[in-house]
Length: 163
Image (tube, rainbow, N blue to C red):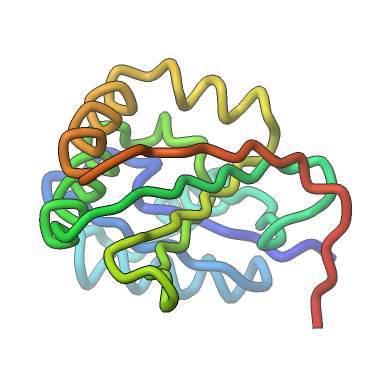
């Protein structure tokens, strides 16, 4: 049975909740119900549980063949501003976000150099993300924060090994 997930970012809220729950269907419905009651002020009833269950989707693996990964390499000494830009982008793009995850690393051998790895379900999803106005805005901010050349590597995932 496929793992299920529910993501608060898919439902507009006044508090901008970003919680994502993943697990077996019944576990996710139970945990999401408790969260909806405790954090969002909903009433625990059949209608709420039905709404949550109808919003469940299959959880995706961390990555899989057919996915698309972008590596973005850039120099910066302004990581706090970088983090603020990412938070703004996540808020502004909301449920239109097609990037599933990202990792930011600092290069141990080249101080001040960073690499961000961003995963999308497909190349097409990455291009949809790139065309979004929120992505154009963060790209402009990132270029200004970079202290030099920004390079991109575009990779189709061919194989992955999970432990």
